[in-house]
Length: 291
Picture 1 (cartoon, helix red, strand yellow):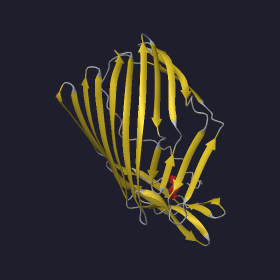
Picture 2: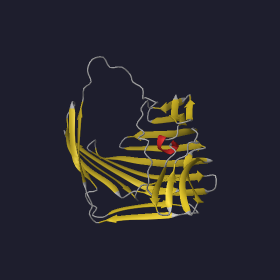
Picture 3: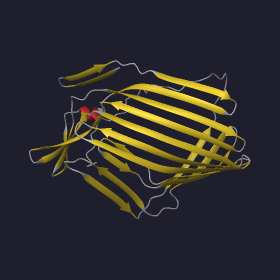
Picture 4: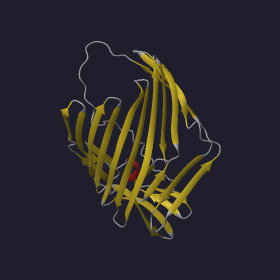
């Protein structure tokens, strides 16, 4: 159930959100899994507010109380094969959104207005395959994961496509109770939605720790080998395109400590993942940045 009220504008809707999961194991070392979920997505409270927020002397951001909820379907197909020291894990995903809420730009009274509208569709097609090898028994495991994502953003007045290619590498070392992990992805992670392309910085993590059957502790650094922070954002609006580049030599490395403690006791029951988030964590605040 979704309910929203502001002045004379009210919106109430009930929606089912079914999901499906099918698994098949033809032989011991081969596994297939298909899952699908139909979701009803509600507008952000910040987008629904009748508020105008200045970005700069030439731009402002405006809410849209007329936004409607929209449906999306998320599908994935996974195939896993294990044999000795080798294993592969292939994943294909397809996400489709019908009439999603994405940004629009128009010109009004000598100023560019950025607002939100229900657009035509958004699609994300992804494929990745993980190649895993045990380099030294169960002590050293290496995973190399090439992946590709295709974005198709179809607005009321625009059509944008973008292909992202990347490779993730994960190296795990464990000996007795000691564990070490190194993870990296190249090039920097990117994401497309509406008319916006967001590029993150290069990311790698080095962690080391100690584990027991009851507890474990790990400590490490994010980006310990990078001295320059870089980030790029682009907005492809034909009326008012924007590109921003952030470069900083004052790279702030993040130190991380992770501690786990096993509190399981009593009778163990089979659990299933929660499919609905019954949580109101939307602050209702509109973002005033250019992108």
